[in-house]
Length: 430
Image (cartoon, rainbow, N blue to C red; front, side):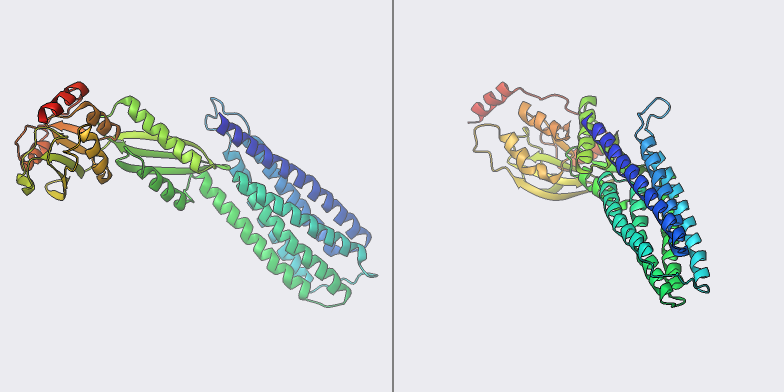
């Protein structure tokens, strides 16, 4: 609930800056037009036209953020966030149009020189005011756009920063025109117009990709995959999808875990994944996690054994009291021994199995083969998503592997003896 409230607050914050910028820039455009008309400055009139287009584009972004802030409904269960992306598409078109207009205007200025009747003090003052206002608006738009991840505001901020350069050009053009210098003004306007066109096309292209659910953030996907893979219980990650929906992102992922865990534990694992991802990335609005049973071709297994004789080692009759443990990787048609672990806790009086598990759990265990296991060890392994299979004492490791591949082993679904029975066995062992 708190996360949803933060998202709504972010949208409202974006709406406020877009609304304020629209009013301010529209007012500036009107001032430019009046001063340009009164002092016969066609450059300032053209700049007023350009500012009007900017104001319209910012208004469009406010409108998109306002729509995106609407509540979810049965008709729109994912919200209206994509309205902001759609409006960004329109903004990109407007920016491109404004750039083309400036391009033609710059071409005309190459061959036409208008000389003002006197020193253009008021036109220069208005251009300077426009420059200062554009800087503050662009800075605020970028700050809020980054904060709420709004592509529309970021697009407007980029265009407004270009307006700063345009204001310099306008001021230079006014002065150069007064000094009777030809060509310079038109050439610079053409360069800036070309950059504006490129910016507009870029925003149109990105918006189209986002509306088609393209993943434009492969780095984020890699970060999420690495983050999830470190979670206990996640045996594999089959797929991660990221879609941009307005200022927010939606994530879908499919993970694999132990096929024997309960529905409750699978649900808890999915909740953990969702909480981890949304906490680490504030721009992610929701995470849908689909949990599948693991079907890996490779399993990491541990077996309590009596001796160290490779795959001919004999299975010990009790997990915690075994003198050795063999850790191996079981592939499709072969098994590779990774390590032999000496049970250094045999001289301990209590909870030997638990101590062994803590020592070997870092191997990323998937399976335990044993004939007996106590209550604490059983639950600790289950909490770490390890499947436990029953095998007969004195079987060799190769026989265990063959029966596991053939599906002839049954899972141990409850401890073979209670905590009290474990204490009695420890007393007898003494």
